Image (cartoon, rainbow, N blue to C red; front, side, top):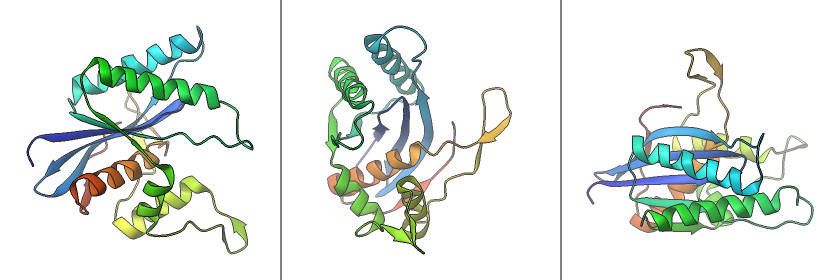
Length: 192
């Protein structure tokens, strides 16, 4: 396997992403970050264009040749922003098609089961489990991947790290394992 670089996206107003290279049967995660979609102006179409332009920036800095995106699950209890999430996914699919980059839609439960190595916990010590914290914990305990507490902003300041990219890492791991039978992962560096 040579020169395979994959982008994983977890679409939302704050879209988590990561880029990884497949090198000698190891998935090396080399870029992790978030895309903050500018929703202060315009309408949904403008927001999708903003997301697409930011995916363009990632591609220019780190050319990838495949994309994986989490599927969307409609839930009647959590329907705020459902349309927008669908629009963002469509924008990514259009970007990929326009740029002739293959993409794969990742099943939510499949990638979570892979990362968690089984079923998610409903409660720990009587408290409801935060799903994002459970993924971050599983990345550390099950896979040895530690998410940072802080990152460096564009101005050079130390800021609290937003963990929206943790799901993108889990999705990428599942995609790489399912597509290429690779089960060794390492984080090479944090760029964003």
